[in-house]
Image 1 (spheres, rainbow, N blue to C red):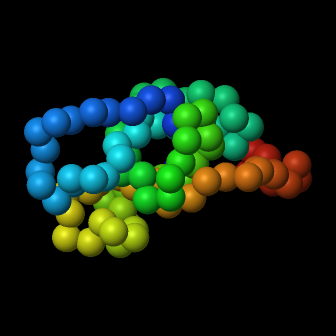
Image 2 (cartoon, one colour; image 1 turned 60 degrees about the vertical axis):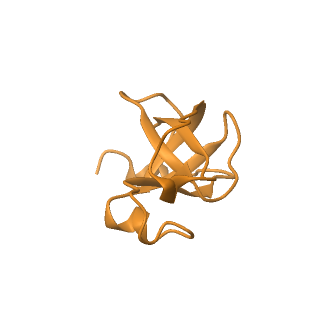
Length: 94
């Protein structure tokens, strides 16, 4: 699973028909502290995430197991909206 922040949307008027009606969002991976990491990912939204929300992404076969993604050409899916993240300070660096 990957923590990310929603930073934009993708509009594709021509796409695989199995993706019709699916919202595609651009996500920026972030560290548990909320700092940006490199790259961007386009993900299918399964939880009605909004702009600037922190989300949980899954990819590969896990993405195809997400609600409404079975038998669809999906590599990354948003499966959760994060309320908070906490890290046990004793666990850092191990």
